[in-house]
Amino acid sequence: MKSKVRLLAVTGSQRTSGNCYLLAKRILGSIEADYEIIQLAQKEIEFCDLCGKCMKNDCALRDDLCQIFEKMRRADGIVFVIPQYIFFPSKFLCFLERLRNIGHFRTHMGYKRTFTNPEYRLFSEKKPFCVFTISDSEKIEEDLKAVTEHIEGLGLRLILHDLPPFFGVNVHCGEDKGEVLEDERGIGECERLIRKLVDSIKRRSEKSGVQTDA
Image (cartoon, rainbow, N blue to C red; front, top):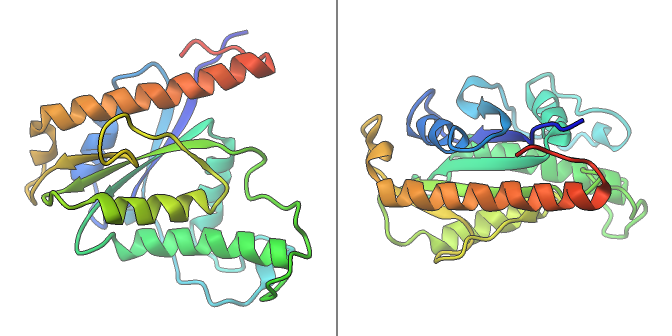
């Protein structure tokens, strides 16, 4: 039985239903896939307190992180849509830090540098992901490279774009809500990259014998 590709989009903006959400909805609406958009602006994400309890159990902090993590595990691919402020939003960086710390504590069983549980992986396979940024700056490449390296550190696999800055696609936008939809060239490149993401999922599924109708 055929099934659609399941994508999860995480928007890192600290504003609800703004340009990141509008861009995610536009991009995901351009493909045949089941998808969900999670806006971190609507979620409670606390700072890690390094208690170490996640070595053997779920994170002890009672917020929305574990629920989002589980949805990431179930998705076939993940899309990150992030605005560039001076760097990237603090809540999004906190979100990445929490996930990276879970991986670290379960692999090293504490603060050690020695791998005591080297087989542990946050995700059972190198799930593909792609990144879209929103910025009014032309100089996004270094920041985009830095954030994609952090995401790759979770055990995910980056789908590169064919054009600079390669690590993802930047859509030019100011502060006004809806302005992101005016950059048709940028949106077109986003749609190209998301199709590349879906194609990579489809090829992997065909190799494993699971069909999709994406």
